[in-house]
Picture 1 (cartoon, rainbow, N blue to C red):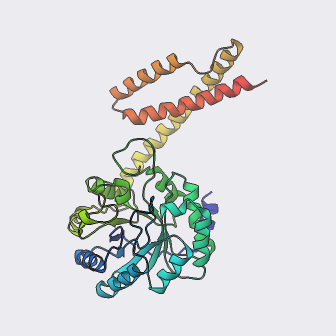
Picture 2 (picture 1 turned 90 degrees about the vertical axis):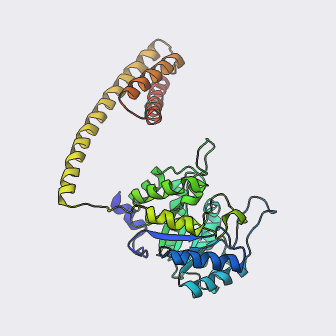
Length: 362
């Protein structure tokens, strides 16, 4: 599997600086004064690599602020000339691409709303054919890793070799303290299957508020993400878009100063001790899988017994009692209740599938 996966993006260029990159700037370009003031304050931090700003804003309602258009590209270019920072903006159609290239934008990103439409992504990819520019792809709004990878593939097949993925969280109906659920398992899976593609985290869209921004940013670094894209505005309270999630350059500086960038590997003694602990985990995992296999064999017996006696597969009282009892025991053992609940529900789902399959056999 690994060899096959690597062939998909063979020859992708490692274009990041070899350390976590910081991309920061306002959600939207609003005025020349706002752009230049924000840019100079961010530049003074000394830790911002790329200045970002939305020029065209995909809004839910047409009465909302939809960006300043081409004028904002002129301001972005001025930011580059005055601060030396690289610049980036979001593009959603071929016209955006052509205008961005006209104003020497250093890198582009495709937003979450655009990624959900393969037709739009393909049009952008076709327009970028033969252009040597980094392109970052935000994850789609829905938790669909194949849609995310598909957008990266469309760029790659048109010759875009400087790629990155941006993890901005996923929209879910369940209540959450965050604007978008992080669902870290999805970007981690992307890194596992496509290690040649850098993954940059957008904690602004995940948190939706400055309150959670530091913890999300730190977790991204702890999970070896390749950088951060953070929305920062010189006057967040007056921002025309997403004012609740934007932070001041001062807030950003304080957060970046406190951020801990950990090493991926330790010294020989550390690695030796780590390997011993991992060996113990390997043994326990083998035992766990063996026990799980024995459990599923019993499920087979139960399914056949129910079929012989015309008993329903699902029995609410038994399931409710079992779940409560297991959660109580797990809690006494120090296990997280939500984690154990999800694990038990997954096992129960597989048990129902097996029994239903037995019932339907002729």
